[in-house]
Image (cartoon, rainbow, N blue to C red; front, side):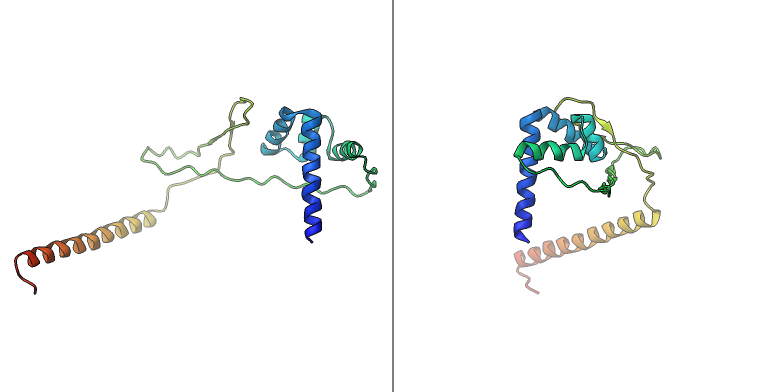
Length: 163
């Protein structure tokens, strides 16, 4: 198992190094931004470098002197991008009842921020708000009683009363 992992890391490094050495860091950054923005690997490679995954593997194999890859009639499965919602923190501002998209910073190339997909968000249930308020009041009451108890005890000790 360890040898397969080592091989995988070595191949990943070799392929990444090939792309950077052959096409430059700017192209690699553009590829990563395209992938981050949800493009499939084939589409991102095609847009950035002008070839798809098969073309990348062929060019990389040629650059390292490896045998051409075996051709298969079965297509390679592509992963589907997963949506990760952006959570807007609760603030003291007014509630508009509308979902808010949060800008996602782009790469260091100075591109404009992109908008995150929005999701419907509502107010927290009133029972939850009241429960949290009651819990906070109870906690303050307990802390107040403890502090008051320490104050009275210290005053009793100063006055010579130890009872």
